[in-house]
Amino acid sequence: MCICCPFIVNTSEVAVIERLGKFSRLAHPGLGCVCVPFDVMVGKLSYRVQQLDVRVETKTLDNVFITAVVSVQYQVLKERAYEAFYSLTNPTQQITAHIYDVMRSQLPTLELDAVFEAKEDLALAVKTALSETMSRFGYQILQALITDLDPDNRVKQAMNEINSSKRLKFAVAEQAEGAKILVVKAAEAEAEAKYLSGVGVAKQRKAIVDGLRTSIVDFSAGIDKASTKDVMDLLLLSQYFDCIRDVGSANHCRTTFVPSSSSSADDTRNALLQASSAK
Image (tube, rainbow, N blue to C red; front, side, top):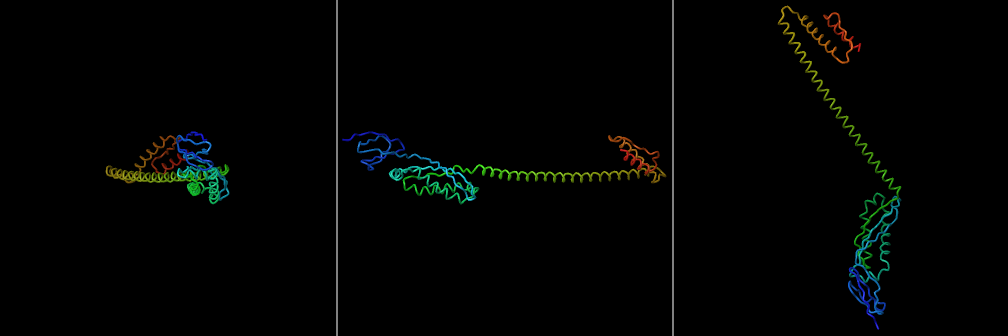
């Protein structure tokens, strides 16, 4: 005598039914029943994508211990549900063992800096190794990811200090280059200013000479019996009074020495020298 017992299988799951200890059939989602005590539902498998996170601690080629977190996404193959249920007692333990094997064989061949650059290669090696093994047991490896690489705190601090020193060195070099450009531009500007000042002074002196020449010619032509010496004395006297006016109107001028006789150019020159020495 047997009793029909109903059961329900959820979506994305499959139930394994055995009769008298032997595999009988797979029950798909929906309502099903077993004939107790001959039939027994011994378990269920999920077709959903599952993720397993594994932490692996090992050392690199330059003897730095590092902890890597590997995330593996896997799924039961619908057409191989029988193998997935009966082949492995603990599939997560099997996957973990393969991850340890791959990571502890790959990381010791790389230096610490190269490990961070080879994350994609390491993830591909883990996926390839797991796919070859787990496909025989009815599992499909969808993705393998290296989600974290965590060296010792002292190593991370040393790496940060090295990076900071490199950036500081670059900043100092750029600052020095900027200061150099400022100095060069300032020197070029000063040279240009002096050049233009010299051009201006030369034009000014040329204009003064031309003016003096014209004055002498006009004075000689306008006054009869005027000698060249008389003309020069008159011009020097005029310049003498202009000089006295400019010196007296200067802000820093305190004393002006005026010679008793203005007929001699030497007296004018000596008076200016005395005024300069008194400042």
